Amino acid sequence: MKNPQLLKITLFIALLIVAGAGESQARLGETSAQIKTRYGESFNGFGAPNGVTTCSFRLRNFIITVDFVKDKSISEKYHHVSGRQLTDSEIEALLNANADGGKVQVKDKAAKEWNIVSDAKVVATASYSTKEATLTVSQDEVNDMSGF
Image (cartoon, rainbow, N blue to C red):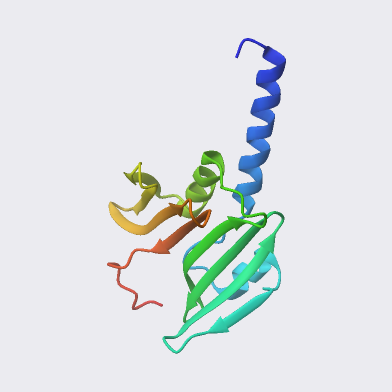
């Protein structure tokens, strides 16, 4: 960009988006109490016969849907209340927040799929559905869930 003022405005808007997305993250493995502390009470929740409890929360312009097994978060979905697509910056901020010290690796750029790696092991996978405008971060299914 040749206009320095326009560049400053663009950078400021990008920082606001990333900051807002960064607050909109629970972390895999958190308890329902930890997530409620972060977001407040859920606006709906239901259990399934397979032992999964699903709760939805609203934080500003995001809806966060969290699946729990034995009171630990195993999957989290993020989308805008308006249904608009998440930006690349928002997706990146949410992935990095969920990495919690691990590293985000691109699994398939075209398919919008990522791995979250910690101690050289894949601990979570993430994918973005443009059809649903939703980012899903889930505990990797090959990991031992005995602690959950």
